[in-house]
Image (cartoon, rainbow, N blue to C red; front, side):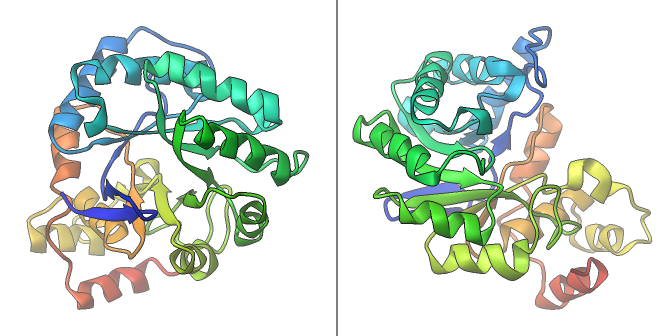
Length: 282
């Protein structure tokens, strides 16, 4: 596995694992709990030690699943990112959300806590005060944001004594500069993050499967044949090769987990990268 720097003192694997819909969407669904627990445990055993979750996922059920999955591992060998929902950004609400997340995760600390979405109705001064307090309490090791523009990042940074070390955004071959919640990812957000030592965590790197709806004669299919890889591995390799970017594709089967692990430790040629970027233009 290849690693990239998170802030000054830690590193993250370039491929992690996301947990959206593991345990429900907006409401809890426990019907597949054991399947998800075993998937996460297998992923960790294969080197996908960065687990991304959120308080919003399944109304906390995804965090419960993660907590169950990591019980058999040395806590220091697993990196957990979770998020605070945008309606919980007032100081007391944010603190309460973080405390509940640690309870569901069955952990004494969160490795990285993100603001899930910006909320223009809550000043950054207030939410950053709460995040910094959590760092001081050693309940949270690192703080960051998600789905933030450069302007929003710049404003948040003004009010935080602890460094903002990550910005989680949509980024893939077919969402390079226009995403569901962000714009100018490749032209503005990622360069700004690189300049400010902020790691970009790319969500939906496969376009929720849409990127893979191709024919063998399409470029992604041709490159998969050339490198003896799958189209998903080509797409993940492209994302993970970008400076200052890691990614968190969801996977629940051992086959897909192994496929994701094997998407790195090799390189596309510069010519093929250029061809991909011409095919999937900004």
